[in-house]
Length: 247
Image (cartoon, rainbow, N blue to C red):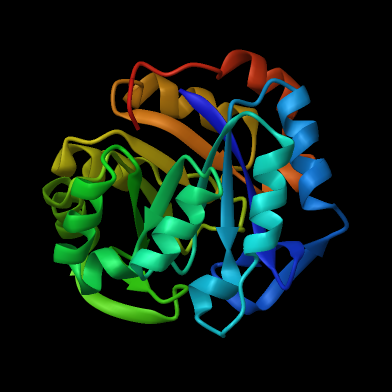
């Protein structure tokens, strides 16, 4: 599996939210473009970018920064946050983004996602962000009355190539990843899953690999990286491949 560093963008800055709470965020003094270049120099092959403004729907976005990051590095880039129209899709793909993460639209309008996936095959990742099993949408600020396993099956039906499963109650907490529910989502969908939320130490990666290497394609890390709880170059050297061809 791959280790995938996260850069979450809010008002142009690199931040980490605590349990998805916009009012409880930590800002890090990093330039997103230079940060991405540094990750690539360490051997990172895939980057996770989240546009928190676009996800929240506050009328702002961080697309110019995303374009600048894309121009600066050659690694695979996946982008999530506020992808709700065909114009969003075309704009981000036109900027050279490799994978688009759809969450809110997957729940609200799966037929549209299926149409996009048919038009742009191999491009869409389902973002399933769950709090105690219920999927949350609109920047995690609204409930959906849909379970994470139901959303996993929907992801397969709409043509997603993989799933990013985020345990909201663990995101930004460094309390350990939700391996059990990540495996349930993988089994429900039959798709490769990328685990997100709660990473705290190097052992979390080996724990995931030990029990679910055939279902987990990658692991996203944010706060543990910025708080220097993990050694990124060391982990990049160890977790740098995947058995999955398209995810």
